[in-house]
Image 1: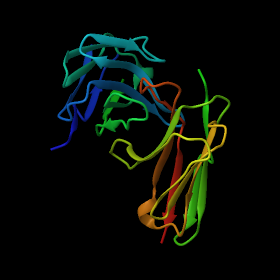
Image 2: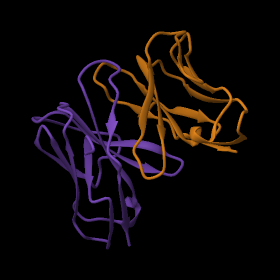
Image 3: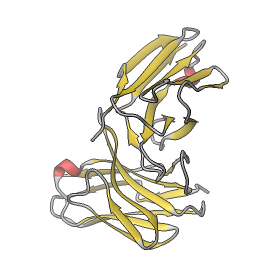
Length: 113
Length: 111
């Protein structure tokens, strides 16, 4: 079983719909992150959480919200999806400390029509 | 936002050739990581460098962190088709673990 699991893997939806992407981890890490990946732009940080009670905005948080339901679960919501939110979304986890590696899920490919 | 620029964006070479990918910034990083990503998967860590001038080797891959901790390079010797993938560098400015990613270099190694 994957250490970091994202669901769904693929989603096609329409403009204006509410969408939730879910992430769960079995690594026991405190820190969790949501990124989006667009061609030519690399990975950009949407939100991050350093523990269950700590939620922080990343560089592109507008139009997104998150919920850290437990140490192992971190969900990303698009309250009213728009076409320019079409992208590949990744969840990642890491341990505390300097230079710790981030462990990524396999991504959710989201298309908004 | 501090930019982290990777070059080239795309690299296509024959099996057995060498290649180098560059990662440059105008700001100093406390640590820098290299990841490789394959289609349909998330990035996977290759190496972390933290000390200016540091060189790390991972089989045929050699990673270098610049003396001023503003740049890094990845060199692959005698590339193989299995080296094909998107190579991403990611830098951290602090001890909190947030990473800033470059746009990536797509490497294609043909037999």
